[in-house]
Amino acid sequence: MSRSRTAWVVPTALAFGFAFLYVPILAMVVFSFNNSRLVTVWDAENSPTLKWYGALLHNQQILEAAELSLRIAVLNATGAAVLGTMVGLVLARFGQFRGRTLLSALTTAPLVMPEVITGLSLLLLFVALEQSIGWPAGRGVTTITIAHITFSMSYVAVIVQSRLSGFDDALEEAAMDLGARPLTVFRRITLPLIFPAILSGWLLSFTLSWDDLVISQFVAGPGSTTLPMIIFSKVRLGVTPDINALATLMVLVVALGVIGSTLLLQRQQKRLLRDQQLAAAGD
Amino acid sequence: MGCLKSRGGQRLSGVLARLRQWRPGRGLVIAVPMGWLLLFFLAPFVIDFKISLAQVQVAIPPYTPMFEWVQDKALAIRLHWHNYAFLFTDSLYIRSYIYSLQVAAVSTLFCLLLGYPMAYGIARAEPATRNLLLMLVVLPFWTSFLLRVYAWMGLLRNNGLINNALLSLGLIDTPIQMMQTDFSVYIGIVYSYLPFMILPLYTNLEKHDNTLLEAAADLGARPVTAFLRVTLPLSLPGILAGSLLVFIPVVGEYVIPSLLGRPDQLMIGRVLSDEFFANRDWPVASAVAILMLVFLLLPIMLFQRAQQRNAAGQT
Image (cartoon, rainbow over all chains, first blue to last red):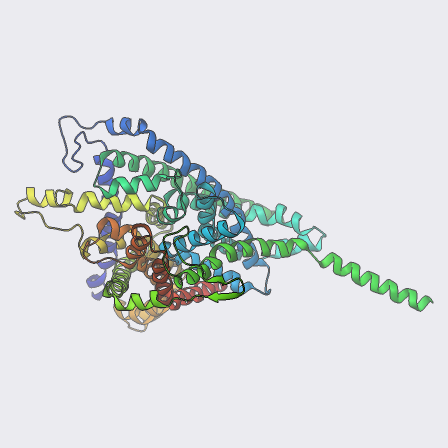
């Protein structure tokens, strides 16, 4: 059969692709329990050990940077969720208005814009602003957060817009016809519909910020060293076991978060489906 | 009198109706994010361009002003185009641009060759398996980009896992130099950007109507022919979106070439940040950025069209 001659391509690509995606991460996790300082030589006698995790917890520099990154990530995710939801709503529901094309272009460009360009340009803006109006005074948490919101809000906008496109606006129209004010319609109907999208937008913005090195490097000031900046300066000098431990912790948190939210969303989806079926049965 | 009054009443009710329709909220919901993006995304490029026309000087900020009042009255406008001329005369910059475009094009191709069959397999899988596979694609995308690149350093180094394994198996006598080569750059980029290729392809392939393939088979087309004549043409928008999502950011990639790349051939993102951080030459760094933007303008516009068509297709 001609089918069997090509049928191997897809399963092989899947197996190879997933191995490619996960083997490096697994190797990193395994070697975080290695006793040897030589990261890639397994010290069988004294391993597995948690000593690099202990070293991590006593590294004041890393802990402080992690706290700063956490603070910026939360601020960024919240700001990006608000602004991004507004954009998503406008693009999906407001129909035609002057500036629509511009808004849509300004939303998609940050998704692909190389980070060095965005970072450099934003820094130059901050310097020019400080010179002419005195704000922002110096660079630090404020400038990093503004920079992160600017690229994160595009991701939220895309997620919210595509969620809204999945629903027709009949519910909102009906509420308007019944005399509900726009804000009420948004609060009672639109917001619950797009809430899962806003939540995943918030989480994505959080990780984008938590992860960002290049843009932060441009717009950070003295005293505002984020976690990726520390990791980068350590990693540049070579492979170090405590970074393996840090990576393992981060992979663990992300894996739990993604799996948890996927299960939660699936349950919500099922409940929504059941409610719809019940409503249909009640008619 | 009565006529006048009723006309006044009409006008009043018209105004009231318009007042009721006038929703300040609507304008505000547009204006706030628009203002943010104009100030923090568009305006920076204008300033970038302005500074690329300045001259470097030892001062804070380290560039000459464009407008200056000379002798109290006359306004002097100083435009220094020589930064751009400099980029074209020193072969370092041209070679870095060409190398970056080449790396971006080749890694996009590899992402496509690996990502397409993966996306195809996921789209054809049973619904339960499909969700699991999709989550496995997305999961690395959520973990730290920097740490995933770092993970490859542990594998590719001369005393790394791959070399150690090959040495102990007796397949090689001396370690193969894999770090700081084109190979390690391609590995790092394909690894980091693969999910960006798979997701838009999957979104496209998942929507395909299976009956088209069945019809092709009924008409005697072999699977390969059916794929080439039906599936592949239908998936072109997904291929375009995924390729641009990989190609454009990779041209300016900084982290991967810094950690895995060749020391003798820099990518342009590295050149830009060296000009800025090491040489403190803000005008040349700005010119490098503007020129990169010029190269990327067409791909970015193509990406925007693909995105808009995609958004329109969903409604």
